[in-house]
Image (cartoon, rainbow, N blue to C red; front, side, top):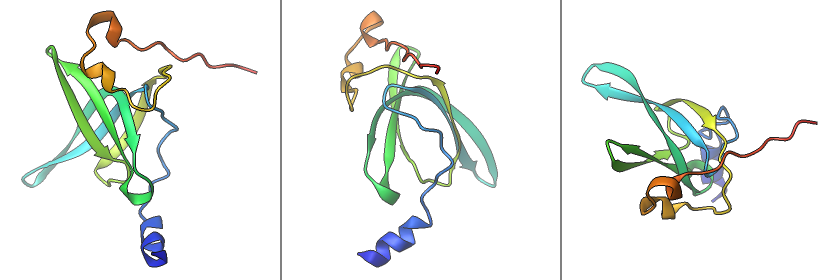
Length: 117
């Protein structure tokens, strides 16, 4: 097991900002179409973070044309170009699966206050 952890340690990315569940993020993801490569931005709310080490992943949900779209991103994927935090959300749960059935105001998340010292 030690060998697997040592190999995986080299592949773990540390260039992401500190994001939490409930934050609204923009994920810049590289998409290959034939020989061409482009970057697609997926903006939504982080619903869950799961796993540890190399197999860590997070789920982002957005509503597009009235339809909910969820996408799971492996955190250590080389296809993720950049991760931007748009809003810091204030939630009291680790998994926000209730957003799937919430509509209107029930689907909103309050902004987290940041203290300045």
